[in-house]
Length: 149
Image (tube, rainbow, N blue to C red; front, side, top):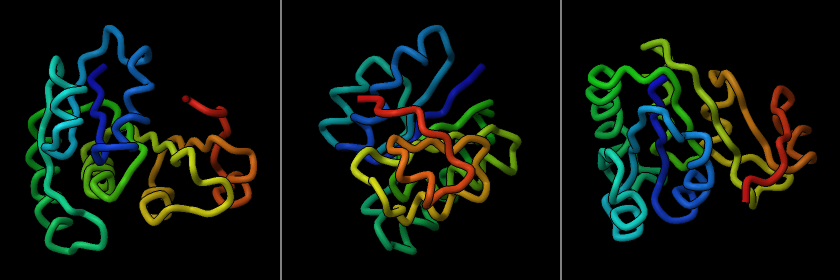
């Protein structure tokens, strides 16, 4: 199984790093911002750098969609996992076209309100995970696995 881990640097990347035990023994690659924290945390990993800032940026969305097409076509991941933020959107939609399974984890600090990214990818995810029971009122098909921290 090949896994694509995609997310912004900072808290989203830290969130995804908590899944490292799940990734043991799996072929994987990461898509994130070229920032110091990402370079440090992923120094031993295969990484593709995406464009930022992404928040409400049509230009970054277009550039990251083109990047997603190139990377997904080359790597052909079986599974794409993200906890956001906006860079997840093009990778999820392109990944869906290429047959990847999609798992989205809504961020820990959202207890009763959706994120923009969560709303955008929710309709196409194969598994949508929340970390608070209250979030199941926001995302009806979500499952609550509790905190990954």
